[in-house]
Amino acid sequence: MSIKKILSGLASSRDSREALYKHFHRHPELSLQEHATAARIEEELRSGGIDEVLRVGATGVVAILRNGDGPVVAMRGDIDALPMAERSGKDYAAVGATQTDEASGRETPVAHTCGHDVHIVCLLDATKALHAHRDAWSGTFVAVFQPGEENAAGAKAMVAAGIVDKVPKPDVYLGQHVLGSLPGGAVGIRSGPLFSAAASIEITLHGKGSHGSMPNLGVDPIVLGAAVVTRLQTIVAREVAPKETAVVTVGSFHAGTKSNIIPDSAILQLNTRAFDRDVERHLHEAIERIVRAECEAARCPRPPEFRYYDRYPLTSNHDAPTARVRAAFQDWFGDGAVDMGPVPASEDFSIIPDAFGCPYTYWGLGGFADWKNAPGNHSPFFAPDLQPTLDRGVEAIVVAASPWLVADRQ
Image (tube, rainbow, N blue to C red; front, side, top):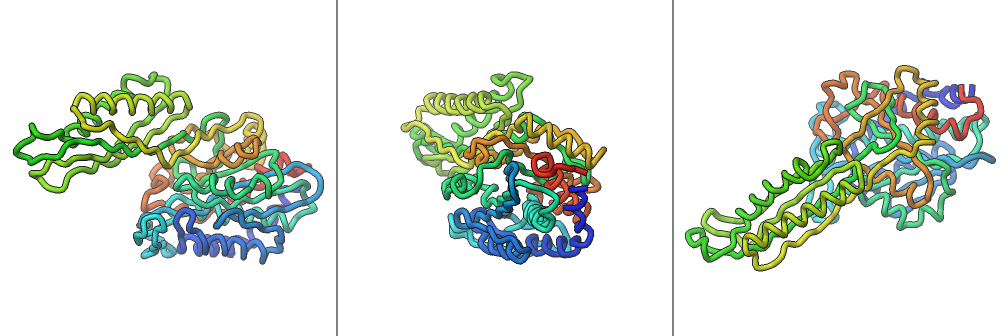
């Protein structure tokens, strides 16, 4: 009866869980600026009687529950929000929430339109439940509240701040993400590639400015950029094998100031996605090859410049822990445990377990009853149903950890 004992307070804590979720939802913070969020997480942990609480980096928080001999299980919950306005219509929506972006100095709207507030609350309550019922399990549970997932900098920041030296090495590293693409309340998992590798690339094209009436005296970077954008579409269509998945998106094209001025430069911003590291390398090689060739054909006075940023590794679940978690989900949730397909979004989740040198597995949590019409993550309308999402997220963490920590997993 161990899992049931750990989760015995699920119903009685529901109101406080929902209230805490609404608090985090109303008070979102940008990546690596989650100061109030981290402080509230620490407050919740300590008020729940958990003493071993560490700051790892400026806004990373780790709680360690040591409970005798046994494996070490780490569970990650990301805590940052997005620079966008919410339009969910919920009475607890972060309407009017803004924050100054420390990198740019600009004021921007902020919203939890990816679901990280769900992750915070579920991990907090699962940690409290494990702490309250130490007689039902043995080993060590490590709760990792990670900042900066949305800019791919938070996991790296925690590694740089020494998480590997400050925390017991996990036998397995776990994670979950609330999604609109799974049935409400379902938990979905798969072995192998789950979230794609991703990178953003800023390309600067150097032309030669001129009067719009004398184009022959210049090198037009707008015409060049248009040729580049068109040619880049051939990479996926003609260079990537049909059985592979790849995305090359040009999301931004900036050049010029006036209709009769040929500018001297243009800036393109690209994003790539792939479920295979070799495919990703091919995409980047092809992008640079095509851009350089188009620049040479256009007689550019200088070669193009490439800046890679917001790089996310491939998230590929390890087979052994995934099989154990999938079996535990099946035993506990029955038909609510489903097989999940690859998701072309990206994550920095794997950076910390890779730094530890430990296996990991990651699953999805369905957040909407009407999931076939649910908004996607990062939509201004994304706000998961409170229930059963919050309850199921707590359950999923405890159940996923149980193959390592719980002897009697009923």
